[in-house]
Length: 385
Image (cartoon, rainbow, N blue to C red; front, side, top):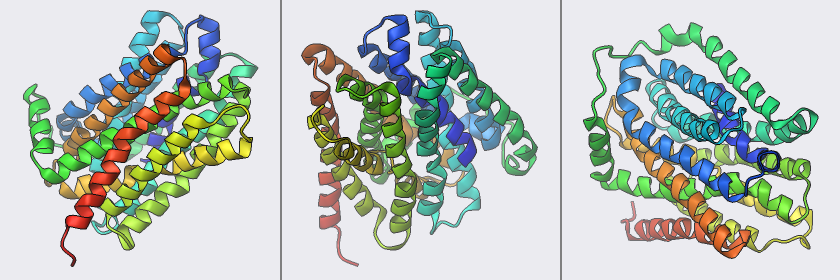
């Protein structure tokens, strides 16, 4: 599950990391980066709301394979470089990547100790920054060596190869599937009702919206932003990779804390306030700031905005009814995809109106600030044990 999510994260993030080359080659404005990732998030939202029945029917491992096939197809399609191809690529990659986390959560929740779910899920979710790290390290140099189309096609080939590597494990890990389960349009409604009708899941859903929105904005615009203040694409990609590397131990540490020394919601409150503060600091950075300082801010943002997943997903799995963890996880994550859809689009709109990259980072950090304050209030209002 770690490896399949690594390749999914690599394929989904690659367009943002090599965006300067794509924008130059196709002669389009940076605003379209937000539009591309907005489309990706919209497709993810729909796919995550409806994936529960498919996971139950076909099995978590099979759906992981399907996720990788869609990433391979969508990434290869983007290499055509036409507006229609990029539009379809965003939708296919968004829908494919959306299934990855609910499927892996369904599988791991069956075979893991409930006490250590935050740590187990955090270990699994380190795959996302690992994929982003690979994208940042390999994407710009490969693009410079060949071109951005070659880089996208290579990513597609890697995803396709791992589909075949997963096949021998299917009989073992898909033994709980229910072939008679069918997909119904009402599944969208029932998943939403299950999530919004339970106070604990509703709070997690809004936290996911805020956190994923900051993550999507940072991932989509960080490299492009650095190139506007004097960094070369390779240098910006390297700094992006360093920040992503911090998220790997960050996720493990937060999962360990949430399993042993603090409540998961207290950990999430700290992460929310941290990402809001880091986004604000990034907004004020400019060409005169030392690279080390910009890197430290990026690392702080990565350690918060890209490191919350394991704790939140473990809380979601705990709160979900037995046998519905994949679907409920998809429902909570669909709110996250709404954040990943709306906040980059809001950032694009602010960039178009003001010409400033900084104001967008500040505005996109506000929902996280509100979530952090609300979680602290809930913790203060809770009776002492």
